Length: 180
Image 1 (cartoon, one colour):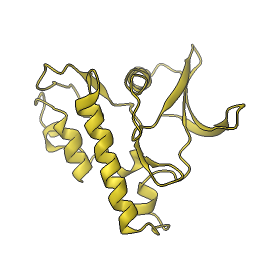
Image 2 (tube, rainbow, N blue to C red):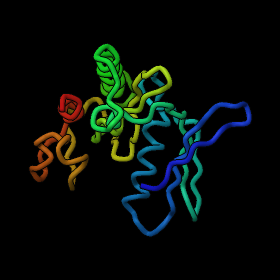
Image 3 (cartoon, one colour):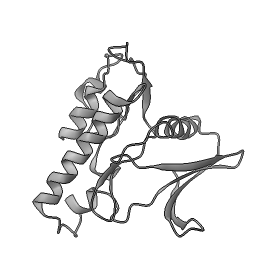
Image 4 (cartoon, rainbow, N blue to C red):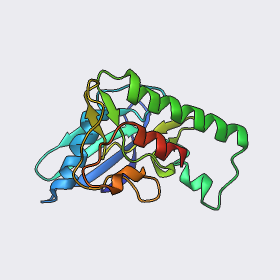
């Protein structure tokens, strides 16, 4: 992963800069490239916007729009649980719209593989945006499923089919995680 810093463009727009130190960890490099390759191709009101990135021999950095209210998990599981049911309903609907866009409206289907409250970010108006595309994969629309080597996602949120070696995986695994 890496560290996330708050920054600001010269025009005053707040940004979040996710910095990954480069090392010999091939998985971290693949996650970085997956994030750039997927979120960089999309624009939707319910997806965190990627403004740009930098990648060299020493580090990689992703520059995202800043989400003033942080992640949904702090409202669901933290001490600050003062979010009303109407807002939670709107968060659920917005998150579903973001997933529908990834699965049905992009040129190539994008499977996120790590839908969980920590990856649903909230802007100043508590509008949800799906973030953290480090495990995401592009999937040809003609393919009905993908085969993966290795586990993806977060235990407790991942669909049961991930537990079976070489089991066909579809975009429906994101729907399962969303339901959890």
